[in-house]
Image 1 (tube, rainbow, N blue to C red):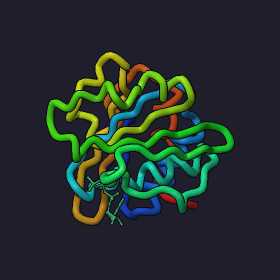
Image 2 (cartoon, helix red, strand yellow):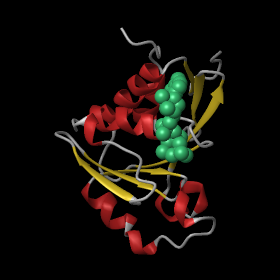
Image 3 (cartoon, rainbow, N blue to C red):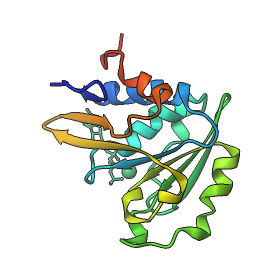
Length: 157
Ligand SMILES: Nc1ncnc2c1ncn2[C@@H]1O[C@H](COP(=O)(O)OP(=O)(O)OP(=O)(O)O)[C@@H](O)[C@H]1O
Ligand SMILES: [Mg+2]
């Protein structure tokens, strides 16, 4: 159950996508979102919703685990999707030029905790598995624009 205003329980994949869509609709250029959670937590599913909210084609969203970087040119916002899993802990991500990516759009990173991204003031989102549901928590209280995505009910109408 959800008690915190920035923690939302998403009972189904559709609910997670709906949350992602609300995030994608308010993302701005320069936003860096770091998604943390175990394998299968729903990070890529959430990114699919974010891309749709940004006006991109959901069918193009897939796990970048073997590619590191996908670009979704949304109608309202370009979303860069990174996955650092394969780089392992302590990865040096300078070659990804995250600063340059943030100049052209928003950046969403799976397994971002494996690298030091603190220079970019990331917004941290944690996904937990609770049976079939996912509990998705926005850990940074300083961006009301993005937190607003959590304030509406997760259920899709
Ligand atoms: N409530 C839910 N929200 C999101 N995904 C769900 C939910 N219930 C079940 N799932 C399933 O969980 C899986 C989530 O997979 P996904 O690839 O998004 O995980 P991930 O966190 O990106 O994992 P990885 O670390 O391997 O990249 C999907 O198969 C999805 O169908
Ligand atoms: Mg993934």
